Structure formats: structure tokens, C-alpha cells
Length: 354
Image (cartoon, rainbow, N blue to C red; front, side):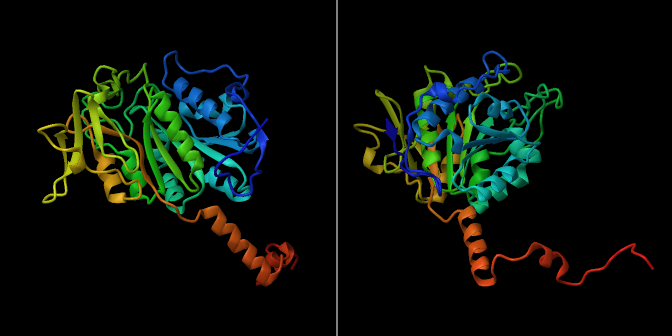
């Protein structure tokens, strides 16, 4: 049997054997705490990888430092466990050197937004064709529970015993501010929605940024319970879909989002007979960066939290432009001579015979 993928990486083959989830499960013992949200994300990634139709030898996973960064060991693909915050830089070099690879970066809120913040924003603005999965548990888990760049104000941890006074990052806003061409959000336990988002990220040509709310049941248990509990989820999460009204809530208590034309602020309204008609609701346009920013900033309890593809746009990728530039230089000047390049200009011999 063969399967064909919709949007293969540059230079990838068009045909490959069909895989199952098991083909992407490594023989390594998984060393995450029992109950960690990382297990759920790993399971969905293995499932999605098997469905993408990309040959196994064309996958590479690059990680930094943190609990999430053990990911490459547990995937039966090529992988690099790099250093703190530098995974985007290593992944960029890998993608430029071999554009046919499907390169995935796995990082955490501390690894990506603290020591790695500079690397993250530059890989996004350059639009390197990578899938970047940021596991956000709002805590440093590997180093035993210090506050992170996404911890809420007032968060009491081992490093903030009186409560954090830092304003946290909103990861999707960081990505939008860095001019990312794909920005999405999901939750570790939202199985179907997470798979859909990972597939969409894989099919996008350019830097795909996916924030995944992930529970750390040891050091920050229940960080996202307010929006993930099954009994209240419908009223506190809006799943966005391109071309569809921004609507949420139960079947008997539908709600939606409108834009106040005077203040350009979002409003939550009730939808139905005698209330706001569905035709007056905002319709999601994933190509609109202004709308994406409004959605990314929404927080419970004032608003529902937006999940899905918040923003997506098409533009040229960094590795394609770099390699085209290299090809043009070779065409104009020839392949070049390394020895001549080193010694062809002004050179000096230091410490030679007098």
C-alpha cells in the first residue's frame, strides 16, 4: 500500500509505505512523571506522523532542555537533544542543509520564552519551514517548580514564595508579534482538536507555531482546569474555524463573539431567537492578523479561550530563499575554491621565522 501527502516538504519523495502509530514508538523507557500531559501529546504526535505519508527517514525532531525536550528519545525518528533555548537555531541549520526533511521543534515555555526567546522570535520572522510545538505548563517542571515566563501574576513557587510580580507572556501573541506565518493553540487532552492542529501545522509551508496547554500534575496541577473540565468546557472555549462564526456554548445556551464598532473590542453575546442573530457574529478569518491578535489575548473568565488555527498566511520560506541565493551565487561566480577564499586576500603569517 502507498499513501500520498498533500503538501510534502521541499524535495521530499511523493510516495511512501503506509505506517501505523507503532512505527513511530521508540524502544526507550518513557521517563515522565505518571499523569504528565506530555504522554498525551506524544501519543497524538505518533498518530499524526503515521498519517502524514512522509517517509520515516525524512522526520527529524529537535529539542532544547526541559521535560518536554526528552521527546526525541520517545519518537522512532531522527532527533537531536540540543542545549537550553537553542533548538530553533539547530533546526534552522538542519532545514537549510536538507530541505526535504520534516523538522519538528519541541520546546517548553521556559526553554522557548526565557533563555530561548531570541532564537524563537528570529526563527518565526525568518519563516523557516519548521513545526514548533511549545508545551506550556506555566512552570519549570524539570528544575522542580520555579515560576516561568508564562506563570500568572501572584504565582507562588519555590523562586517566588510571596507570589510572582512578573507580567506573563502570551505565547501566541509573541508568535504573532514575530510575524509568524502560522499560529495555533490546543490542549494536551483535546485529542481530536490537537490532531487536527498538528496536521494543519505539518501541511503549512513555513514556521508553524503551536502552543499546547499541558498539565504538570506535580508542580502545577490543574493549571488549566477552569477551561478543560468537561462540565464547563463548552462555555469557556471557542474552537475557531476559518469561515465559520465565532460561536461557543451548549446547544441550549449558545454564545458568540461580536466586535464593538466604536471601541474595536470583542463582546460576548447570547445567540438565538430574541437575542443576537448568528448573522451578526464575527466570522473567523485566519488570514487576518488583527483578528488573530484579539483571539490570542482572550482569557477566561472575561472571554472564552480560543483554540485552533488562529492565523495562517502563505509566504516564501527561509531555506528556499537561502538555497536559491546560494545557487545564484554559484551560477554567477562558479563553485569557488576554499583554499583560494582563505588565502586569496590579505594574509599574514604570525610567529614565523625572522
